[in-house]
Amino acid sequence: MTQLTLFDGPSSAMPPGWRYEDGFLTAQEEAALLALVRGLPLQAARYKSYTARRRVVSYGGSFDYDANRLQPAQPLVESLHGLRARVADWMGVAPERLAHVLVAEYPPGAPLGWHRDVPDFEDVAGVSLGSPAVLRFRPYPPQRPSRRDILRADVLPRSIYLMQGAARWDWQHSVAPLAAPRWSITFRTLAGRRPSSRAGRAARGDAPQAAAPADLSEPPA
Image (cartoon, rainbow, N blue to C red; front, top):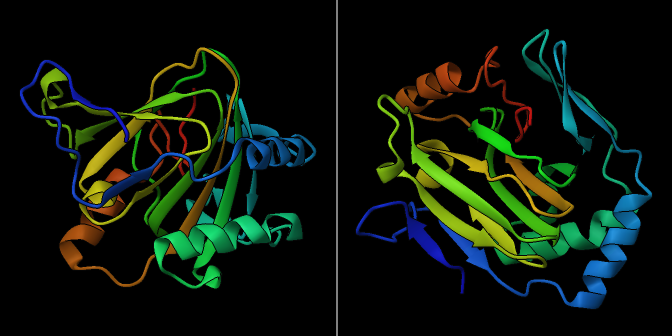
């Protein structure tokens, strides 16, 4: 079971729409995926003129921060089709619904700033490899940010998580600085038409910002 904590607060409840499972992969499966990921054409993540510390590769779409829109990208490599099918089965959707895949490599000490994913995507599922991470949540919009509002979950290697509904749209998330290298493989479904209030929040909250720009999942670290 994931360990959940509310900083300085009385409750440990996570946002509705958050789902987490340890042991989604075996140690052998993780080792095989790490060997595969290390052979992918990872490049430093860029946000306009900023170069992040992470290295990433996108399949099925790439966000253009100058044009502020999702651009076409290479299709998912066949070697990741099996993992996509397995994640889709866990989510209860067809594999083709997972239209975007982002592979990311995080060096020791790299954090991931507060953000929401861009509104082109709906549900977000992530498979974790390497070292543990602490995923933090705070209500959106953060009008008066307080540590008392922050929830966190220990995300272990070989685990999987899902953000949908309120966890996806009504909360921001971030990752605390890492003690050791970590890799993530994130799968996303395309967003359909949403209620105007949510669409307005998405348009306001997910546009790149100078202080903390957002990409498909990860602002600069």
